[in-house]
Length: 183
Image 1 (cartoon, rainbow, N blue to C red):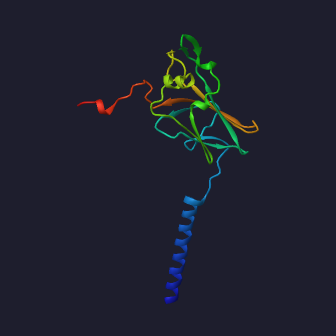
Image 2: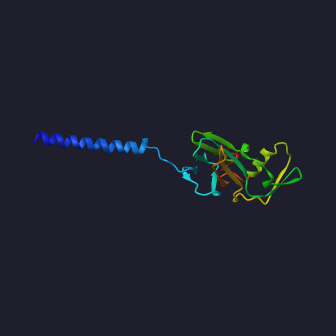
Image 3: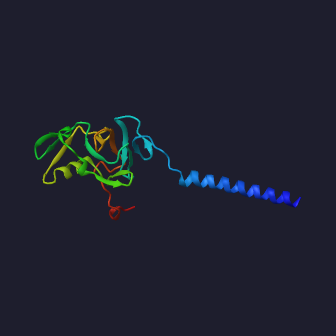
């Protein structure tokens, strides 16, 4: 009877070790195979020209899974609106590569696009035209997907483009000074 009890506890202990080991493997050690493409906040963007919103209060993390190593990113205008720089009429689509005007940080498996919480199209255009005295924007809508992000493999064999708009920013250009607010 004692031997049976020892065997029972040995089998029970072995079962606990096996179940615990599987849990640890599944939870912490297993690497998931991801489909090729572009992931935004861990979700696969299933189509070219998918529409996403970049949040001023987030790191906006992208993961790139291509069959080859290495990629380039480019941010370009997508929707058109007009604006005037020191009296000269311009259109947003006439601008070229805008990537340098975004805070893009390359990570181990992708990149992030960080935005300041006081991002506005006015401030963005002022960064493109730093020596201008006046910039007046016409028919701009922050609800439009004004930008397109394109990720291309180094050999140009794989590419995906994503349309994006920017949300949760102080897009009106209004900033409150807490030291001047009286209740």
